[in-house]
Length: 378
Ligand SMILES: *Cc1c(COP(=O)(O)O)cnc(C)c1O
Image (cartoon, rainbow, N blue to C red; front, top):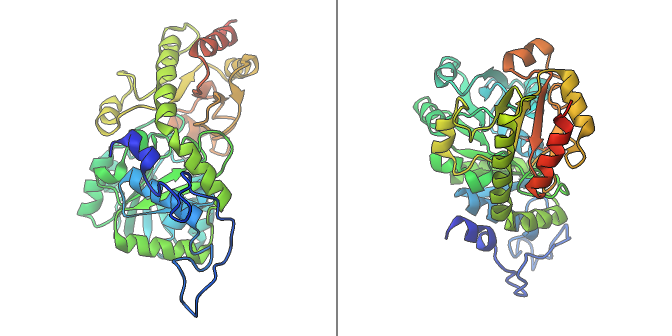
């Protein structure tokens, strides 16, 4: 099955009971047993629910893994996966991971003895240097936020295998439509399905897919034990969103190309960050491991003042955190998503006060260009 077909026919294509062409919402917590232990595959909805199972089967098929798991948020999925480690284990993470990942690693999971270090994973020799005796996993996010830095997934997986470590990839920005980390050798792939997979700014959800029965058993044990499962209504919404992922991703990218071209030639824009540009330092790696470059662009307006003025003047771009939805969103990382990072650290990462991030939506691109043109005027 080709990718576009899989989005429609992957997972559970129809309800076996009724033939309904969308998996029904099984709004239920428990299931009748015909005698003790005599159930039809479902006992209690934390352990398993048919609607959640629908989206878990779908993401498993889309990422080409052994089993999929749906959680109440991207953070719940990430936390459950890091819980595969034990107290005293060490994990290496991409230095500019999503802020929530940084927070849960440094402020919550550290309390349970999980050691961590953050390295620039776009340079694999730095990752190798960071490996310790107790290192158990490499956690990469690619592309990253907001500078769209790329890590070579296959190289990370090779390094991890050499040292018997797990390779975990946060694939939120690329989605399985553009990039499949398991096929490149990773062991676990994660998604904040709140973003492109849901795609309509109406659901918070997280997904994980593993590449072995052993990991599937362990992760199911953690999911069932800790209980941060996705509810049936949200599971259904997520499946509904995923059906149109191909057309949305193609269109996001088409609009983004027009917008990056516009930004590149604009005198008020100092720098444009987009992995699809040949000038992007990781363009070759991005091209090698992904089929597309996505709909996220960042650009430097030169100062915090100019950036804030732009944000005030735009009409179609909604000032908001999050990304990957049908509507275009705009944000100022230094004051919003990355405000909790100390100013010196932000400067090291290249997140200047004038850096603006946009998530290009599905509006007519001519309207988006007109909006930006007006907002960038003096
Ligand atoms: C949003 C996001 C998360 C967290 O997901 P939630 O659904 O908000 O919990 C994790 N990783 C990346 C890359 C994200 O963009």
